[in-house]
Image 1 (cartoon, rainbow, N blue to C red):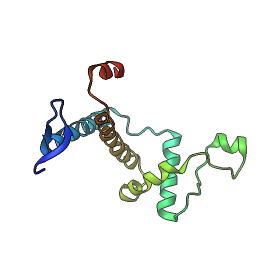
Image 2 (tube, rainbow, N blue to C red):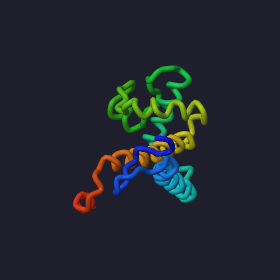
Image 3 (cartoon, one colour):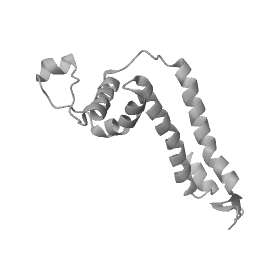
Image 4 (tube, one colour):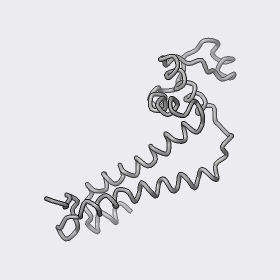
Length: 143
């Protein structure tokens, strides 16, 4: 196959690996540009309770190797008492732990993970879109 890839064109030919890589990288680069632009506009000092809860959970995982939480909201303590079960799912904590290990338990760590996931979503959209036939009727239905 040489320098040819298996990305099909409308005329039945194949794109070169370079063209295929550019097609994949274009949405990723766009996603990274959007993330960089929004960072300038974002309020860096504002955090919602969930963001803090997930960061504390990731810090606990990195430092203590446990998913047990020690972060409670006052409202929850008054309503449920102490201790009570955390209702936050551990998936995001597990994903956030490597970023917290590298950057510390900061909003910067959470933002870095979210930018990576945002750019990865662009790749997933590309992969799904490759499986959709490029017929006019399907494109109109998708629009």
